[in-house]
Image (cartoon, rainbow, N blue to C red; front, side, top):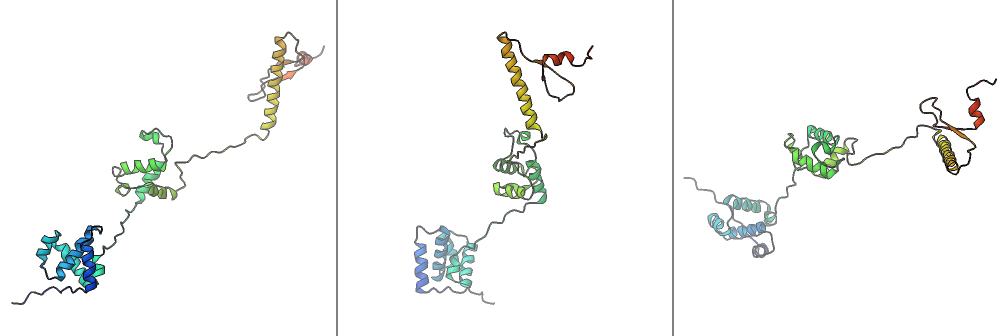
Length: 230
């Protein structure tokens, strides 16, 4: 019968052993690092894997994993965690279109009191209802994600733009004339209260819609307006 292959031995230098012992006895080092140091120390002492499992309370596959890594790459690498950058979910075009459509509507249509969306409110609503709408990629979307989607389109739902347009180039001149007319009318009314005879008579003219509201005429002009002299 062929003999079972034996695992390679882990031979530690005095420096490595001291380092592992220091980590194994540490109360501040991360638990996983303490466990790995203990695994490597026990294995270097030829303690069987089944006994290491009972001593350190770590599963056998995990013990084998860290032993094999240390044998292949060295003690330093055997103690390290491999860094895994969390992979961000891919935002689909359909999910982006859903956010854009949402941003184009008023929050009041969804039962909110606000008239305009803020990035926070939009992100909160997206996280709450994205999965229901079939867009799981937005289930954990934050303000930054929503902002990136909006930046791809000319939308600013959290901002309101104002503009002013001057339609009539003669507006200021007409406004001054109208204000003068009303001022003269007020002066006449004040004179009437004191019993004085006004020097002018106010005649309302409605020649066209949008015309000036009133004109100030002298009494003689009112008699001759629209009549032929005899």
